[in-house]
Length: 336
Ligand SMILES: [Zn+2]
Image 1 (cartoon, protein in one colour):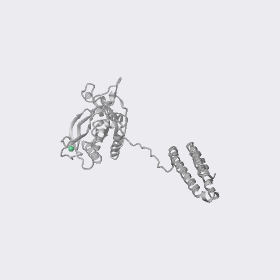
Image 2 (cartoon, rainbow, N blue to C red; image 1 turned 90 degrees about the horizontal axis):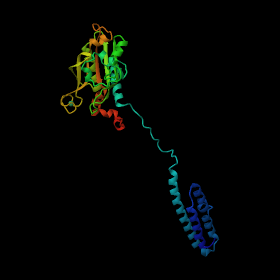
Image 3 (cartoon, helix red, strand yellow; image 1 turned 90 degrees about the vertical axis):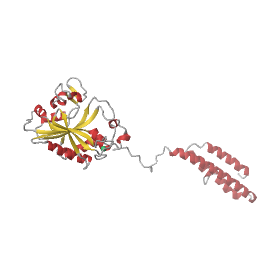
Image 4 (spheres, rainbow, N blue to C red; image 1 turned 30 degrees about the vertical axis):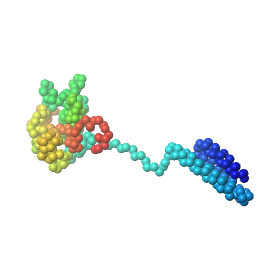
């Protein structure tokens, strides 16, 4: 090949072949056939020295130009093919994708904290069935059959003598039946009431019942235990207020408020300008409850308290809607 016209022919041939290049192997093949050290254009250029001197310059320049054009065209399709090839190939240098780790539900966290605090005061944990006999949920806790207090707790009644427990207080009776004083028990668990669902109430909630029966247990012991709890749970500045109240299974009974966590007692939106937030009900265990489990109320005394775990969690974390706990929205749950 010694004519200048041959250069253009060769280039045309190469370009046609380049169009058909479809994969990496064909690319390699094309490169060595046309552009490599032993490729067609290299041979062409190597032949320049054998041409007559007056032809060398023009031929060399044209051949070089053609080779460069082909090189450029080849690199262009090579880059496009590289992009395609890169995707399915595994890149070992990329950082790994961390698996999303789960965590405990905020109610479980709060329950564990409550248990931990009372554990430090010598309480053990006990549990009982959520489908409960009427006897344990009501009768043994001094709710007579026609007592209006049964209506106070909107009960889900099941077939026979069964109900969905309306509180975890029946655990008290179940433990007393099996054990003799002293008993110091904490019973956290689910409870159910047939209430309209809104921001402040739900048909299912968690309650923790605590009770202590022994000789010489006094109301002062109850106050001491609850104050110690409040200081650890809410902080040392928390103060408690005891108001007289009524529950069938305690006498005397009290409802307990904590000084508002937001304003400290001066009044704000959270406490509705009261300065106090109700956190629990408590009292000295009624002698009738002891009689039902054959404890001697002349010798044995005790206290019991019950608090809503959702309510405590709402106060501690300033959550304003109880439904958030049960919607399982990760954006909510991941905050705790
Ligand atoms: Zn307040």
